[in-house]
Image 1: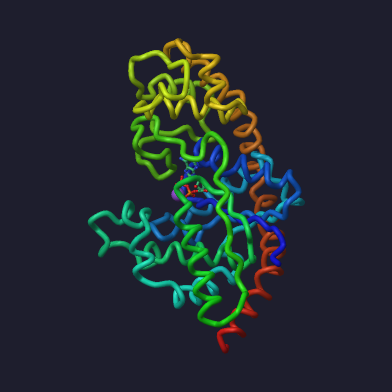
Image 2 (image 1 turned 180 degrees about the vertical axis):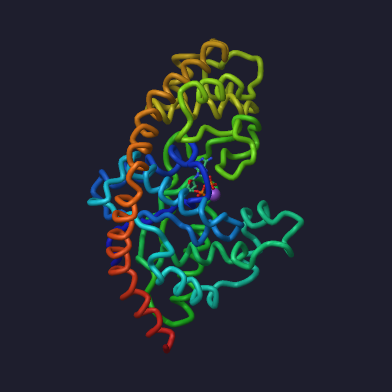
Length: 332
Ligand code: ADP
Ligand code: NA
């Protein structure tokens, strides 16, 4: 009964990484090209759950918009906007705060990872983050959410919140959105530590490839990536227990549109001395056009602001009626 509609977002909290590109951006563009209605958001309200310097946030938001467009998101075919410009996100977020339970938030692994032993010192917003994310999705009645593996639990929580709302108010109002986690690179790992995901918020720049890195930097980061000394195995089973090797093979596969098994078919038996430079060349060939296009777009910040403003108006036109119906259902 719900029309297929895709929603997803990225925090404008710093340099976008190869992980964001392979796990999210590239797939956002693919979904758009499949002809599904696609709504993509720079989630600045999520970014400020941890401290953001105001001037830096503005710049990062434009840069993230440039990254979307340079990765193939066409603002004429997808809705591309900035979360804080569509007030229905924050409003539905509050309503859903009153539906979601504290215990549900407490169980979120990202909250536990980010808060660590210092939960008392975190912002209330960081704790409520998944409930705002549920609002981001549900305020469009979105049915599918392309994300990396790290966001799976939050999308599942969104389904729980939607179900509880429908149950409590005796309605079939919110859909149960599906996480779309597809491809060879749903969880790109840090280049310095195979047990951590590659993240724009990692303090070590060497741990990630930024979309704005130049060719020499990309080659150097792959050359220095932590690996074991063994050559690549001939088949997937040989990657068991070799998180770093597996990560580089997955990245290669995703960039080359191959399966990891096909990559091993080509490079099995060869050492990282051969594989790393090949991977770096491939990454440069895919990322250089993106960073070039990003710099071109960043030369005209007013045009980026215009695109985001037009996107916000389109998003608002979908979100406002759904917010109004939600309030009505709740007796307001
Ligand atoms: P980050 O963790 O880098 O700050 P966000 O929380 O803004 O990124 O996530 C934006 C999108 O990028 C989400 O869909 C997330 O799952 C995806 N993503 C982030 N890091 C990775 C990664 N290392 N591998 C695959 N996908 C990722
Ligand atoms: Na994340």
